Length: 323
Image (cartoon, rainbow, N blue to C red; front, side, top):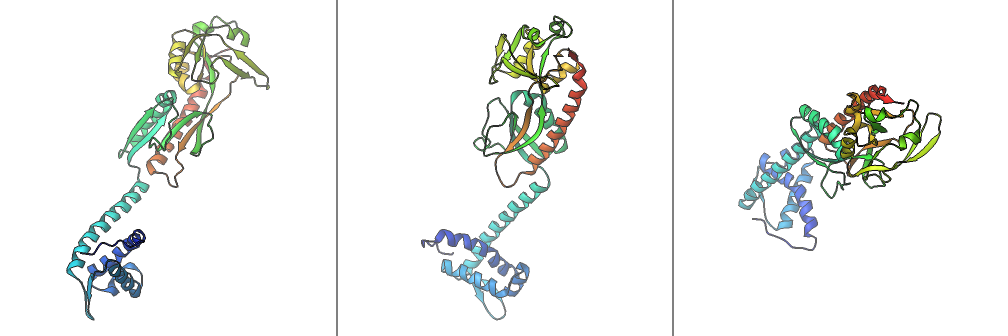
């Protein structure tokens, strides 16, 4: 068998010798330096030189050369059998990468905030898996901002306003913040109610936000008004605030994707629709790697489709309002 060697640059020699395995294996399989060179697309001299360097590195004769043939020594035959396994596994690895690039497969690991994850990402994952049956998904639904690199996450969906990051971000959609309440609460307002009257209504505050009770409204003419609400309930989850509003606890500012279904069925109404709040972005955040897995790109395509449909449906729901 080839001897171990421990020269100071043995690590570098080992890396170089890995490339020579293919040359050596081709010579054994074809029985000729000339045939091996033809299959490899290089010159006979290069093949001969590289195999000789492999033998020198291990101080072992791997091939017996005659004018008519080339055959492996006993050590060369045993070495070839191991080389063949290494080269076969390497080819399988390359084939796997190529297949993954062609067709999405494997486990997609992603994270999303709770409200957007439940309302949009989970249904989008269901559609994604119907299209790509070779894919599975592991979703971390959390309002914590998880580090994709630390948590081995391929894709993070972020909602709102991004902080500076060394991660790669793509804006895939947007959302509106809207003031909503039950029809019963809305009925307590007179037609043409003003912002001050809205501020007097009981309010459900979401403590996940930087300022859960202070909001700045804008009208179509550029007029700006800041309003501070007095909360009747403070809660640390968007879906919890939504349920409180449904139950009539008070009005609240919610992202449109969270309230969309309730606006569509009339369970909630939008208050003062002529006054807008600041909109936010929906972002796909990935580690700053050079290449993106096919399953990640495929899911983002599906999610972007869902976003477009959601925005179209939201536009149809704007008639459910109370001025």
